[in-house]
Image (cartoon, rainbow, N blue to C red; front, top):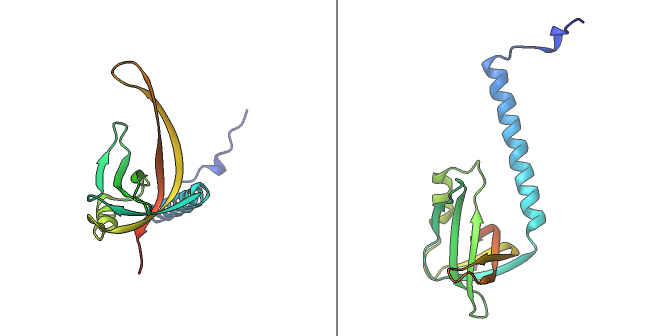
Length: 137
C-alpha cells in the first residue's frame, strides 16, 4: 500500500491566516443566514433597565433585555451573542441602549419547561432575540 503525500502541504503563515479568515467569514455568513431564518417576530420594546451582559454556565455570551412591549405588557428576551463577537463589540452595541430606550427586537418565541423547588412543572415562553437595534425615529 502506497501513501499519497502529494495532498499533504505545509501552509505558510500567510496561507494559514487567509484560510482562517475565509473560514471565519463563512461562519459569520452562516450565522447571519440562520438568525434571519429564525427571526419570525418583530417587537418594539421600551427598556426598563440597561441590558445585562453575562455568561452562561456553558460559556455562552448572552444579553438579557427587560422592558415593556407596545401594548405595555412585560417583556423579557435573551440575545445569544455569536461566538465571534468580542465583549468590546457587544459593549458598543449596547452603549445607546439605556433605561427608557425603545429598541426593535427580532426573533422567535421558545417554550421552556422546568421544575420549581416544590417539584411542580412550570412553563413559560421566552423570546430568543436574533437581532436588536435602537428604534429609529
